[in-house]
Length: 520
Image 1 (cartoon, one colour):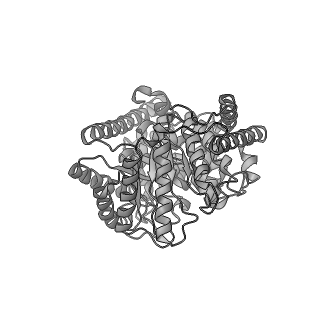
Image 2 (cartoon, one colour):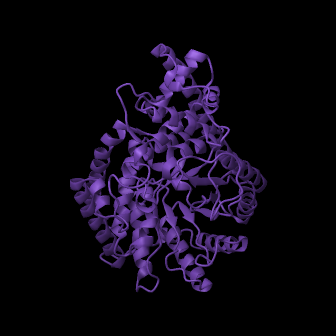
C-alpha cells in the first residue's frame, strides 16, 4: 500500500527494533520453562481425551500425577512414552488406567530412552500430519466455496447453548456474515482444565470444548455449502488453558483464535510468567495449523482513553508481532487488533480514528488487521449507535482493514438478537460496496490533522518501546504502562503451574511445529 501519512521509516524501524529486543529478552524465560497447560496439550496431541470416573479431564489426570510427584520438569511425553514401552499400551489406555487409580507413571521401571523417543515421535508425527490435513482441507474448501472480499464480516454468537449457537450462526451466515465467533462463557479463562463434551449451560457465552468446536465446524460447513461461501470459525485460545485450546482448534479446523500475549495478564490477572510461556507454544500450534490469531489491543481502550493512549495500542501490536514471529507465525496470520473507541463527542474524532487505522495498515502491510467496533460510548441510543457503526465501517473500507467485527446498534442493551445482526450486516455491506475504492481516490493533506496525528502516535509508541527495552516488559506491566493496569511478576493466577525444564526435558512438538516448514 502506498503511504499516505508521510511516516518516518527510520522511526518505524527503531520501534520495531525495540520490540524485537523486548521479545528476545522474554524468550530466555520462555525457552527455560514449561507449564502444566503445555504438558496437558502434549497429552492431547498424543491422543489423550475424555474424562475419568469423576469427570476430571484425562489430560489433567496424567499431568497432575506427575506434577504432584515433582517430576514434570522432564515433560509428560517422557512419562507417557516410558509407560507405552513397558506396558505396550496406547496413551489413551495409559490415561484411563491412571484415571482408574491402577497406574502410577512415576513407578513404571525406566525403559530404553531410544525406544521411548521412537514411540512418542511416531505419534507426534501422525498428529502433525493430521493437523496438516485439516489445514489442506480448509484451503481446498476456501477455493471451492470462495470467500467474500475484505473486510470479512465478523459477528458473534453467545447463547450459552451450543445447539442454539448453531441456529444463530447459520442465520448470520445466510444474512451475509463471513466469520462466526462463538463467545466463551464467562470465567472459562480462569479454569485450569477444559470441560468435556457438548455443553448447553454457559453464561454470556458457550464453553470452549472440543466437541462444541466439532459441532459448530460441521454446522458452518453445511451452511457454507448451502450458500456457496466458506464460513470461518473463531474461538478463544487464551486464559489458563491457552495452548490446549489451540491444539483443539487445530484438530477441529478452526480458522481464527483470539490469542494475545498480554490480554490474560492485564484483564484476567493470570500470572505473566505463565502467560508468556503459554502464548509461545499456542502460537506455534496456530502457525502450523494455518490459524489466524486475533490480538486484543482493542481492550486497552476500554479502560484507558483512546485518544491519549493510542500509542500503547501500536506499541503492543509491535510486541505481539515480534513474539508471534518467535513462534514461527507469519505476518499473514497476525490479525493485530485495534479499535474505533474515541469519544464520539470529540471534535475531529473521525479524523483521529482514520489516522490510527491508516497508520496500522501502513506499518503492518501484510497483516489481516482485526478492527473492533465502538463499545465504550454506546449508550442505548440505537440510532446514534447505528451511525457510529457506519462511520466505523467507513474507516475500515477506506484503510483496508482485514477482519471487521461488526458493531451492534443494541451494544449497550443486550446480547445481539438475530435482527440486530441483520441490520449490522446490512450497514457494513452497504458501506463496503458503496465506498469500495474510496481509499484509492484519497490522499491526505501534507502536514494536515491526519498526518500529524499518525506521526505523533508513532513517535510516542517508539519512545514507549525504547523505554520498555531498557526496563523490560515485565517491569513495564508492573508499572501499569498498558491499559492503566498494574500486575506483579509473581502475582496472578496459575503461577504454580510454571516449571523450569530439566536437562532431559522432552517435547517433540517444539521441533516438529517449528522446523517442519513445508506447510508454511
